Amino acid sequence: MLIWERPEPAARSSLSPLSRDRIVRAAVGLADDDGLTAVSLRKVAAALDAGPMRLYRYVDTKEELLDLMLDAVYAEIPLPEPAEGDEGDEGDWEASVRTLAHGLRCAALRHEWFADLLGGRPQFGPAALGHLEAVLAALRRAPGIADDDPNALMHALQAVNGYVFGAVRHEIVELRVERESGQTEHEWQAASGPYLRRLIATGRYPALAHLVTRGADQDPAAMFTAGLDVILTGLAAPSRPAAGGGQGT
Image (cartoon, rainbow, N blue to C red):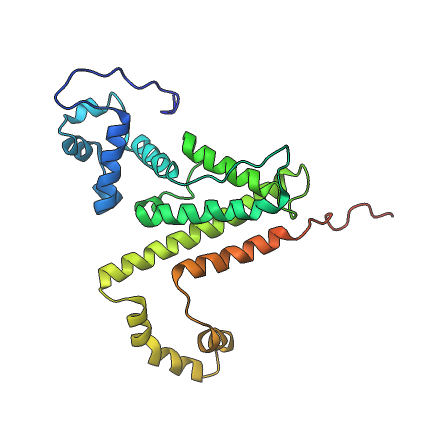
């Protein structure tokens, strides 16, 4: 039975009372401080001043604990206001997707380990499902999604999640590299600049030269928004019938 269907054990009198909520909050605190490698049932029990065996009344495995932690962070992401009526205002679908995407990015910046768990197996926690439902409800109203076409909806979800998850992971990795190396992005660019300019001068990389010499530096939030714009622009285009349909002999 999945943990989402398993009732929480009744509370017991104890100098260190436990609950799934307390266990998850302690695990999130450990992960926030030292990453997912710092999370184990034994370490969580120690943080709660409880014996490890007591935790097994509430959580069977570390994988279940990670599922609970992931859902706890999803619960921090604000959901857009539900659309009114059956279809809602078609113009608000884009604002809803933006709200959800930026909310997920902000949650990952608060809890960097969250990015490590994105994009794996489907999450069935109530908060994760609520987030997924909100994304799907918004995408169903996009002009680029044909009516009653679940495949088009799935493709749109893959495109949005693929971009959002990938961009968030990339940003988190860059933050970790900066901390571990002690070198900021600008310092790294300054150090590698002469080498890159020599490569560009060979003429073998014209597309890269165009990007490097003409592109403007953007902060991570602006970059995230700009990439999301590319995805949403495609979804805003009205859907068209599949090519080749209805042709005679």
